[in-house]
Image 1 (cartoon, rainbow, N blue to C red):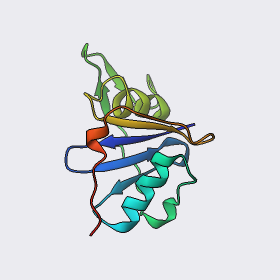
Image 2 (cartoon, helix red, strand yellow):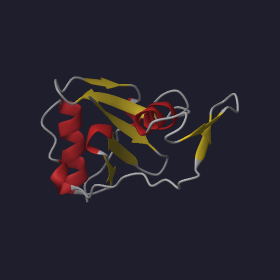
Image 3 (spheres, rainbow, N blue to C red):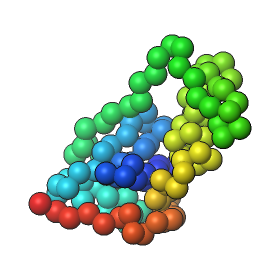
Image 4 (cartoon, rainbow, N blue to C red):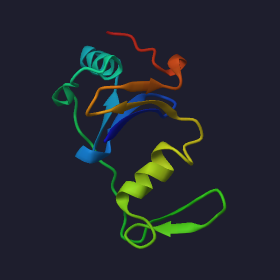
Length: 119
């Protein structure tokens, strides 16, 4: 399974779909250490950060670039939703890096989005 480092403009976050968790990376030591482990392919100590997950309304829908509408549980599973709208096809350049959680192999797409300072 893959884990994803995403830049949302103001901050980076790591999305772990298999764990149904994402972690917002702040300007603190725990976030910096977590990011470094992620990038180095080491076992990431996510327990240092607060896990969050996406919340959806029962009637929520999403559109692709062709304006085709998708509804969760009908045309789209949660895994497909995250893959298509959060991570890859329609993320408009926010994907910074992908990490294989089994092997630790990391592919970085945007090095300039990795900068973080420690307070």
